[in-house]
Length: 547
Image (cartoon, rainbow, N blue to C red; front, side):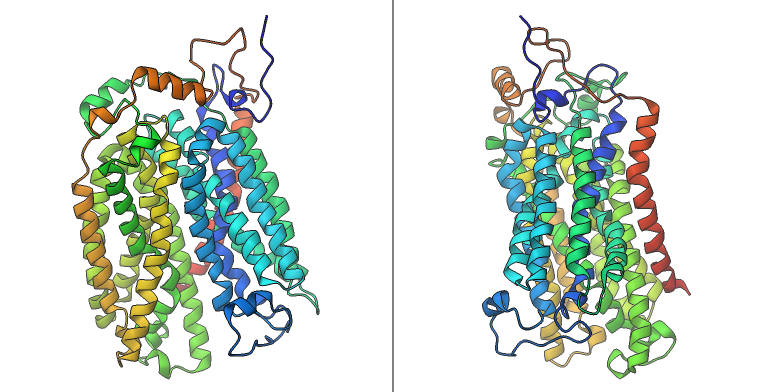
């Protein structure tokens, strides 16, 4: 008697049949990552929200109002410093939810995770829209910050294990494609949000809550499409002509066995890779957040051909250099996105360990050279150094899932990656604190703004030295940590995996989406056109650096 077909949300329903084209999976991952990546672009809302009541000019809260009181205040405008706490909430809850729900994702499958991610991220935007409408900051924090942050974590890790299993021959390239989408989300979303706010602005509204609702609807459609397009390969599937045994022999850092999540996070290898990611991200994330003021304060009037320090510029001149600095930020975004694909793809040939060695050695040289470039007024060297640094910042994110799969196997890499993302949450606090507080201390001690970042650059270079040491200590996982054949079979049963050759009671793996070339083109066009539009807009902003 045949068994009933599993439901649409079941992992069994996502197991691909014969002839499925694996290149349909990356656009599904990109559809989700481009949506949740808007978390990077939320600063586009800060200025309008800071005058949500005053509309043209902010209605200032009392100077002595506490943060707690501001969360519930409805008669004065929010401070940008209060709004910016959303970034902290995003990345703390991204890392926490990825760590907490990673194991569930491996068993439930990427489709369920993608749907829950869509409900959390888009539902969080709806709650935040209501919070803006009634002017309650705590609802903003709860909606997009907490609930949306959980959606970020699930959406971020949902494709990792799936892509690694579909592309065992190109692990770095596959994860690089998806994670490139997260870096590019703001590049697409920020111009869209800016256009929507201008469209919805009225004499009594700055247009933000309406923009939130519109973007929530658009993102929900894209994320559901991505979630339903996810497919996982049957156990034992391999690309035609690929010989995994040859890969293992040529690189002892790549295992063909699997480590369970509960053992993986207790190994020294896990914590060394955790440290490698944390140190690489800490060095880059602070720069990303301070890129605009950094360029303006270091070069001042030299950006517009005037040999005047930043503090001595007129208001009109500061407006001019702010435009140039915005172009610098856009250029860094392009390198951040491009680096995710470039470096992760390179790691397929260089090896993950060697790729991180490049990040740390080259990064150390570049950070250490930045103060000299600033003092000599060499803007070309200064900009180039930061562009390469940001490419390696993005490359670090994209390379680490493949590093984990090499070390611990692909069976539970999504869950292991989720635990590892607590390193991102840590770096998200450490990096900005280093940049901002050291800068403020330097200025308070009378150091000119043009040189207030010098000590910070040397400290960040020191972090990369520590990262180099941690990376050099990573060796293959000890044999006793790997799952036995019986343990692996049990885990695959819990994960609802099916063998490539065995079916249960006549129910075959289901691939309900055709692999027709037209569908492949449509899938890539759906994510490729918005990305290309975002790149073009960002490039136009960046070109001012070279005029």
